[in-house]
Image: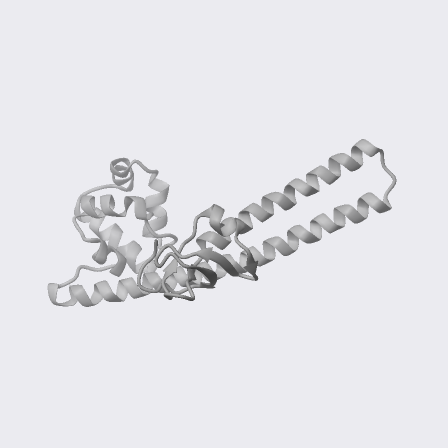
Length: 207
């Protein structure tokens, strides 16, 4: 999606409604700084207020994401293009998140090991060793929980029995037996248990 084109379109629609950035922000219960970011092409309106924004500006979500007013003959085609682009962006975002997960865990493990080495090599009071050790353990646990959340939310899991894709619960994803990113879970679609592999592409439906 062309954020700059969308930003210019938002600005043009706002001006046609004789609204200042501040007035539009008040109608949406957000700051005028957010409006400015949209119109400068630095960010896209959040999905939670996109419908309200379109209602205020008198446009459709499809037109908003396209960055221009659409004729009816082009409308359905543009919906498909926008949906494809949104799916593509989600896949790229999920891929980045999974890469961040790896980097996060590597850094966290390096820090924890470094703390253990320092505690063994440097003379210090017992209370100091305990304090440093607990701090290192807490950061490792925190990084692990964040990693589990990323693992659950980024992409989908594909059942090897029915080949449907689904997003497991945090508990199900965190405590499942696994081989890398392939996890042993119960498929919510067919009810069968088996090893489900991590995929970035949605297949038919999610549960």
